Every structure is written in structure tokens, then in C-alpha cells.
Length: 133
Image (cartoon, rainbow, N blue to C red; front, side, top):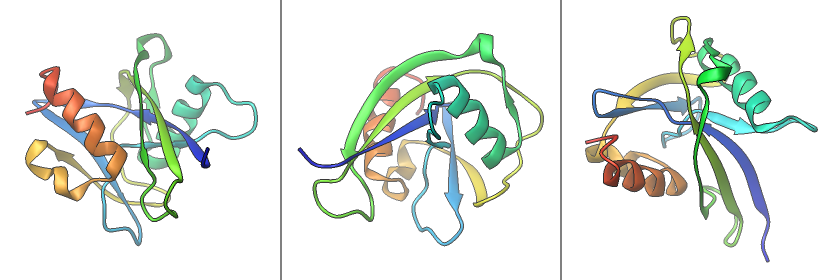
């Protein structure tokens, strides 16, 4: 059994597109979120990561579990998987790229070649659910 990178992701869709972020120095887009710190719950990780990356506050009572997705981790050695526990939820504030995020974009299925391996699986699932076009 290889290493598993445990991540929390915020799935935010609007008008058939999904919010994706490009980190400084990277060439693929990622769904916003990140790794938990210490004994953080999923919700605590989600709130902290989204505040750090996009400078908005997740509305906790709007958060809903979407699913867990797993794939080979981009840029890691073969067999290292990333496990994305994904949530949807509303936010307050104005989206702004901050910290390690260079910019964000609204992507659709036609942009699937621009995203990480695990995000491709998520895009396909969201597309099948009619959440993105």
C-alpha cells in the first residue's frame, strides 16, 4: 500500500463551470483546498484553506459532503495517491487569489487537460451529475 496524501477540497460551481486555482510555479489547475493540520476536522481544514487561498469565508451551515476521489498524485513518485474529500458550500466575501495562489479561473469540461489527475475524476463526476458543462 503506497502513501496517501489526505486533502480536503471545496467544489464551487457556477453557470456550469467550476472554480479552480493555479498555484505559483505550477502548470496545472487544482480545485481549491489542501491538507489538514494537526487534528483539524474536515470543516476546519476547509475553512482555513479557502481563507488562505481565496480570502473568503465558508458558510459552515451550508457545507455538504460531496464525495471522496482518489488518483495518482501529480508530481509525486508512482504509487503516491491523493485522496480528496470534497465538499460544496456557500461563501461570504469577494474571491481574491492570495498566498500561494497565482490566479483562479472558472473551468469547464473543455479545460480538463489543464487539471490534475484527481481533479479529472472529479470533473467527470460533476459533469455526469450535470453540475458542470
